[in-house]
Image (cartoon, rainbow, N blue to C red; front, side, top):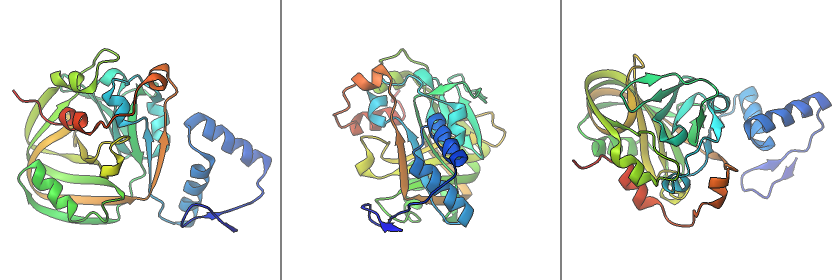
Length: 286
């Protein structure tokens, strides 16, 4: 085993059978994963070693520019974890993945389970395995929730997967509505649908991303709601609740798959999308 050029890692040189090699190549072609990711993930599971990886499709900067044509299918998303969120082709609703099941929250307030052939332009997935947990006694706002999750996060430089279960006294959320290709994200979300529910049992799921990731992910907290009956869901804007179970997972590995569509290849992604993301991710002023 030789020392790798990547800090904290080793290079492993082994011989494998032709059948394994063919299967590995086929898996990578079908899913877009790298050989390194597949091998590390398989070894981690076989040896019982924690190896928390986020798998992301496309970038937040591309979404801001209106590049939200589907580039990965729901079926492919399911091969990269059992937990995550995203959106669908032409911003047609909010994407949720919980316990291996994928859902689509639509602008009319309904939630469906999309077919494996349905495509998504942006998604973040993980195999959720909690590193730490605690009970949140009371939360009275989105800002208060973020502050309480801050207390359990390990670092400002690692990504964090977040799951929160319980009954929400009140929760305010939005759902992106389908938009024409090329419409920038701020304009597209200016007519988003917003909902408020009271005394609803469900799960908040999503991620915290470091500030340095703003050009390819959404910095800070990004959580989606899925009700326990799978009838309601969307991007969380506000919350009040008591006795919530919070679980977090540190993510120390990131795999980023970039689209090869004409729209993505031609897009100008050189700017800082932080301001546009902040506006698009928030509630609309009435």
